[in-house]
Image (cartoon, rainbow over all chains, first blue to last red):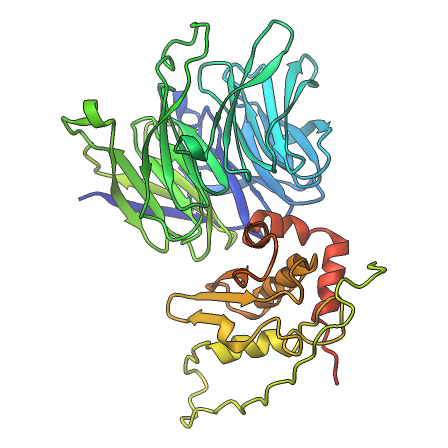
Length: 348
Length: 159
């Protein structure tokens, strides 16, 4: 029997929690589990697992400066030392972990208004941001915490909800209120970033806002979630070959519909191939690929592994798998709470 | 603000005679009282004014009781409103006022969907999408000018 066990509820935010990010070093080589959360209360909180205490998760820091409006999204650099935060105040802040404290070392300005998402590339040399001004910005990370904008990408016709770098290739993915996912690549040596593919409705794309996307561990599959109440799985041929030149297009593999009743805000693909989704129906769902013999002919299919109703009292905005060995999932909701879950005894 | 009214001469309808809400005979003050259509109608109609006119949305027939669907058990409310004119640029403002009023009045377990009546607005789909994108609503409600306008619409008129 598959089970989802609630380990702890983390309370402290005084408004909806929009987004979560596990520190990439969490649980590796004995490093403590660490989670960042950001909220409509304009703050970022850092939570750390303390095995010695009775309430094993504790709030380690509250970053209430410099953002003056909702902090919509946060992302750790691959080294786990820097935390980037995107805010409705139009700025992206960079915090550095300096021992027990977090110091704001840089503030990135340029977007006309709300910044909605931020993402580091795999090597930590590039940062991407996006926002309501319909643009995607690419920033080069220079020594001394300098960030230089190297490209402003225009192509989306509405606000851009999320940006996410491919886990191994230098490809940037963005999804939008305009119902599309766009894939951006550097076509030259001179930061000539162009849109190389648009996944839109005529090609089995979404019919409403695309809120989030996530890649599988090998990077040859991607899942997107939408206000159209579906999850879609996309695939490409060369995700496993980061050195290959020439872009291999992504194609629609299958659509998971009929599971969610309300907007799906978040989706995250675990290293061991379990897709978690969090939606406005307060439920968390888990999906796995079916091991059917006809998958070679019809393409892959996925089925619901587990559904946790009333995982939170209100809309779920973010679900994130931990990077460590345990099957830990963090979820965040409109009720201001964060929950840590463990998915137990799954056979797949 | 708006120098020229978009709909200068709105049709004013009579207000509905309000029923006196029945008081449960059992004097159990802890009894759960389900939220119904009439209660939502009262929440919305007693207070919200059209941003362009000093009349309530009821008097302008922007909302009627029939256009409110409530499922108390599932915690779901859907309000369908009819903008005064087809190209009314105030449709998103009216919708935002309805959302804010319900947000402030209903228990947090309620999910609220707001839409303009089918065929009542030139850019129906765009208005509906914007009104139900909670991120855009959250961002709008951090804008002091928007909050001021919404609060003005929601101020009781004490007639």
